[in-house]
Length: 258
Ligand SMILES: Nc1ncnc2c1ncn2[C@@H]1O[C@H](COP(=O)(O)OP(=O)(O)O)[C@@H](O)[C@H]1O
Ligand SMILES: [Mg+2]
Figure (tube, rainbow, N blue to C red):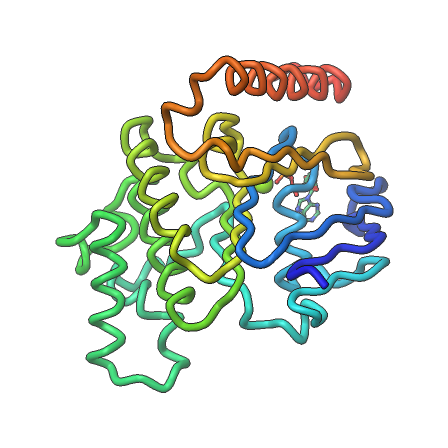
């Protein structure tokens, strides 16, 4: 059995009169690093909402480590697309938040949160409030909060466009940093991105979603792309162009002219 399994899943939001996913099946193995791409609005974030029990009215079966999403509560460290930092808590206290339910001393919580804050390059910002940080910095705090959860036995990391608000240089350094981080983790990682190069570099597999509803996911093996230089080989450039073309076709088919 695979670590994550979707079997014949059909889902649409009640408010909407169309299906987003229809009879969709896919799986992710333990230690897979999967990057998820697809046109805006196709249902990428919804996959994560289903896995984390934020949406429960689906048909078909979803299992995480053999359990239903409800039974598997606490398995995933989830970084949602919108950072859900608490405005009244400072950065340190936002990062310690997921540790508060765990049996550990306050000093240990603070020390782990500080370590995560350091890892995302925000040491010195511990006492600031989220409103005092840029969008990119808030994303990094949100990432640090996800990271501390992972240090406590979460086996699945779900990252929804974690670097979208970062400037390009910070983004590059965060991508390289993430690759180093996830390599040593005993976890399955799924990361949504709208950046094709990021998808090729960070993932060992790309999940390409298309169609409305999404009926199947195209899986592209990119495990041979392990460093930035690998993005510039002729076969990588060709793959990148292919993926960009797939995006543009999808956009045109949706009548999305933005
Ligand atoms: N909580 C929700 N309630 C109703 N409709 C939603 C909700 N979240 C997303 N949608 C709709 O479902 C579609 C897919 O959304 P989403 O999964 O967020 O797309 P993506 O992450 O691929 O951009 C969009 O048309 C969006 O408007
Ligand atoms: Mg989304």
